[in-house]
Amino acid sequence: MRRLSLAAITCLAVAAALIGLPQTSFAYPDRPIRLIVVFPPGGSSDSMARIVQNFVEAKLGQPIVIENRPGAGGVVGLEVVKKAAPDGYTIAMAGAGALVTDIGAKQASYDPRTDFTPITGIGSSPFLLTAAKSFPGKTLKDAIEIGKKRGASLIAHGGNGTLMHLTAEMFNQKAGTQFDLVPYRGMAPVLTDLMGGHVPLGILDPPSAKAAIDAGQIDVLGITSKERFSILPKIPTMSEAGLPGFEATGWFGIVAPRGIPDDVATKLNTAFVAALKDPAIAEKIRALGSEPMPMTPAEFRTYIDNDIEKWSAVSKAMAPPPAPK
Image: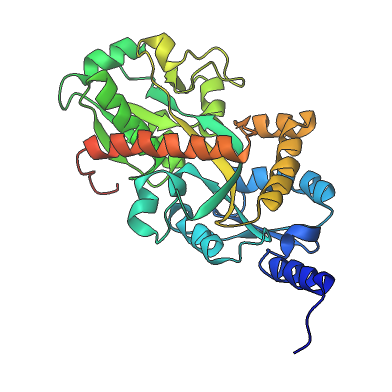
């Protein structure tokens, strides 16, 4: 039998090693990238995706094809990404609802901790505890006193299992209040009933509420961000208003399937973070009522894990929710 030369053996060893490597890591990207937005066109996440789209395309040298795959609070789109090849050519713009709350746990086959590779955060937005003009309390401390009497009042929110719902529940838990929590089908009807005086309190986000606040149609008792929010700088944080340490934030970010090559994750992260740090793009994201949240993949992983722990604790302590209105 003919002996193989040392050079031939070396070549075979290198070839064998290369066969086991993901091919995308060599010249990634060399074709268009599909960005699945897990909500319908026109919403905040869709708008953010389109704001960063052109910049990221230029950075990566390939088209970013946005595909809206709504359903089950974002679960449907993430199911698609979970099953996609781990090559960096299918990624998702997803939010806390499908990645950290009970929505994902109850309806999805994925584990948000293990089935995705975090790339970066994109934008975050706090919530507002808002009040109808007819509500007798004019401060957060007033509302807490009123809410300590069972059945005295209620908080409307955007749907069972949403972060708005969990924020209202966390308020009850931390403030020691007993507000009834009433689910609506989104924030728009909550705002309508607040303006009409049909509900006393509601959880809204800045984009939904800002016009009504500016017009003096509703009051705001506090904002759930850690610090004052750029587009509503006069609104005190919940901590400032009388509930120290209270913080709740909704967010969107980019995730990829588990197992994509590290250098592919790095290229994606670099492109999206550069977009978020561009002043013009950051200004457009803030105009939507969100703050850019550029992160490394490791930072985004920690952020997701911490949010899962936070909201899981709130969920475990809550009573079964009433039926939707």
